[in-house]
Every structure is written in structure tokens, then in C-alpha cells.
Image (tube, rainbow, N blue to C red):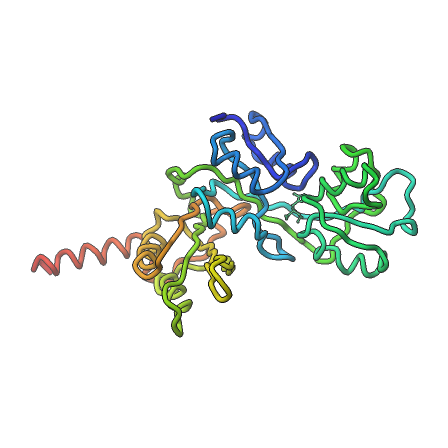
Amino acid sequence: MSATRYTYLGPEGTFTEAALRTLPEAATRELVPMVSVPAALDAVRNGEAAAALVPIENSVEGGVTATLDELASGEPLMIYREVVLPIAFALLVRPGTKLSEIKTVTGHPVAQPQVRNWLRAHLPEAVWESAASNADGARLVQEGRFDAAFAGEFAAATYGLEPLVTEIHDAENAETRFVLVGRPARPAAPTGADKTSVVLWLGDDHPGALLELLQEFAVRGVNLMLIQSRPTGAGIGNYCFAVDAEGHIADRRVGEALMGLKRICPKVRFLGSYPRAGVSAEDVRALRRGTSDAEFTAASDWLARVQDGRA
Ligand SMILES: O=C(O)C(=O)C[C@]1(C(=O)O)C=C[C@@H](O)C=C1
């Protein structure tokens, strides 16, 4: 295993690479671009890389399904940390290309919904075809396979292109969340502003089955930040749920919620507890009464005393 190698969704010039370079440790790692999210994660699974940075959620398009599905199946992996990056696209073209000459455009599938209105207004006749990533789209424009690509402005130089239009984003403040994924290990200590990711499978189909899962969090005052259903592949109507909950597995309320889920779900996959990007302990909302570690401990001490006849 190379402890110094990090893979990422490449090629060079993706938003994923820009996100990876915001991590302090990136300066001392060998950063290796991979052709796809599965390829980046497989390098971790087979020991060629210590970790991989991959996109998982966009504020306009929602979950990045390739990442969610990879984390839900196969050899278990764990999220070590997250990075959130503001996203604005540039329309990259070969030097000299005019807007009126653009007949074909490309980009990552997650990019398209973020620029749909702009395309409708400025290039209504252009044909869209998806690329493996935004930077890969830029590479295809360089090769002459498309007239223009939506990518980060910073990708232009790498592929000998020029940004014809910049700051393209249908939604103000669009962001993509990326996760640094490694092999399962002991989660880093709680910071007071943490997130816990799990994948949950429903048992037998019955009214309220999903509600029962959610109640495990609700009764312990655990706030949910994401719930995304994904088909299990076992037939229509078979879904698992990727859930992000506020807090750390070392927090009693989170640990007890996961124990409750373990008792009622046929399968629970823990994906990690890690610090929330851009949030510090002071920003975290106050806990609901009765859900702090001290209150959980006091309650279990009380139960032990009652069981002992000492209450
Ligand atoms: O990293 C890139 O540039 C990508 O192509 C991936 C990705 C994504 O999947 O979310 C990253 C950010 C943008 O929102 C669109 C695409």
C-alpha cells in the first residue's frame, strides 16, 4: 500500500482535484487522477492508494449516484473527511471559437442540471453529450470531438482551451460536497461538529417501515442532514437508504440510534464519523433536552441501581 498516494476523479483539472488541493495534507501526497469514481475507489480497496477523493452530493443535482452505490456495496470503505467547494462553470472552447459556432457541448452529467437554464438561453440548439468528468469533457474539446465543455475555468490552461464565458451557474451558491474515502479504521475523535454516514436496508415491506428507521434517530434527538434512497438492484421497489446524521458515533445518542437500527434492519453499513466541512462546534445547534452524553450516562447509571435494588 502506498500511504502517500491519494487518487481522485480525474483527469487533471476537475473540481475534484481543486477540492483535494484544499486539504493541507495534499501538499505531501502523490495525487493520482483516475478515469472514474469506481476506479478511484478500487485503488483504495486493492491497496494502491491510502485514500480517494470523490464527489458525493451537489446542491442542485443531489446525490452523485456512482459514489453512493460504490460506498453501499462491495468491499467496505470509510469516509475520513468531507470538503465542500463552490461550483461555477466556464464554457471552454478551442481558441477563436465563437458562441454562434458551438453545435455540441459536453460535461459531467452532474454539471448539466447546473447550467440547463444558461444553455436554454444562450445555446438552445446545441446538442449535449455527457463526459466522464468536466475535465475529461475539456480534453474531448481539445481533441476536436466537441465544440465546448463546461468545466472549471482553471481547467482551460491544462487543455489549451479558452474560457469563452465564465461564472455560469443557474443556482446562486451552488456547491458540491466531496468525501475522502479510505479503508475502514477507527474514526477520528469527535470535534463537536461531526457527521455520521450510514447505509440502511429495510427488512420486510410493511406500512411504516421507513418511519421506524427514522424514529431511531428522532427519539434520540439526532438531526438528519441527508436521506437518499438508492435501488439495491434486487428488483423494482427494493431500496436502501444513505443517511447522514449530525453527530459522531462516539456520541451516546448517535451510538444508541445505530444500535436501535442494527436491531431492526437486516443490514447496516457504517460509512464513517468525520468533521463537518466549514462548521465549528460553536455553530452546532443546542442538543435537545435528555440527549447529551451526560444524560444518557445518568440514565444508564440509574437503571443499574434500580436493577441492583439500590435506587
Ligand atoms: O470534479 C469534477 O470536475 C467532476 O466532473 C465531478 C462533478 C460532480 O460529480 O459533482 C464535480 C463538481 C461539479 O458539480 C460537477 C461534476
